[in-house]
Image 1 (cartoon, rainbow, N blue to C red):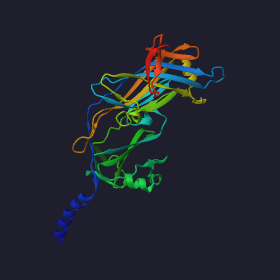
Image 2 (cartoon, rainbow, N blue to C red):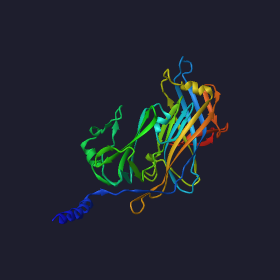
Image 3 (cartoon, rainbow, N blue to C red):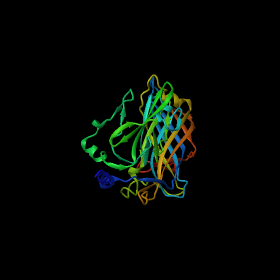
Image 4 (cartoon, rainbow, N blue to C red):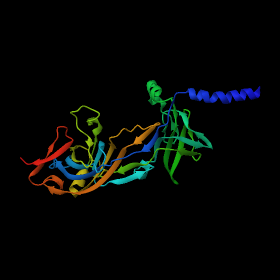
Length: 340
């Protein structure tokens, strides 16, 4: 009788798991990419209200030459543009701690599986990622989600595992603690876990003392393939170059502990950081639950030496005296035309 019961349990357990609606693990494979080249070819920083005791407004007009050097048609997804006195940063696994005055940070990720104490886990019940209080204790944050959100995004079975790495700056250095979602409960598995097929944790982190301005443009909202035919075309053909423009006003208030952006401009030297994302124009869905990675990220840092003309500080490698820029109707791109 004991043997019969044991065989019954072993036989029915796989059937119960098979009956679950489990989202399959998506294997990511590297496909072709097309990193874009970015170069600042023109910049104009004009200080307005120069007669005031403390001028605080800067009009900026910066033109980037964006080139697709690859053999693939590619879509420009976004550019995150910064101008500052200096740009510090790079790739990091402890993003904020390495470059900013932070005491802790967390990385949230998924992996194909995980070995914990010699046991392999590759199926889990999804749950919201944890938050941490000042003492490093987990705050689940379930209360921040509505019941509909919990039902839609979580409490579902999936192939793979969810994990969280929590970085803490302590007296001995930066220590890392790893937590694994074990069927809806976050468990501290630090020193006991080996991840299988985890996504890359490296990311770009930058600090910009003396920041003058920052502007983010999402070009996907104007893609010719995804939207109306009369919208801005964010696709670049192989070898194509275009002049994209960033312009506006800096109303950033100067605080006593900051570096005054006016002083940065008047020093005659600024640094530009342009972060870009692009993807090759191909179907990313592969066979057998695979996703083809077509995305590329670039980070271009360029130092500009400015020439003062009145209240304006200029950098120019593209315009002659009898030429000017003409905006397109979207305010995203410029063309060089003769001065009328």
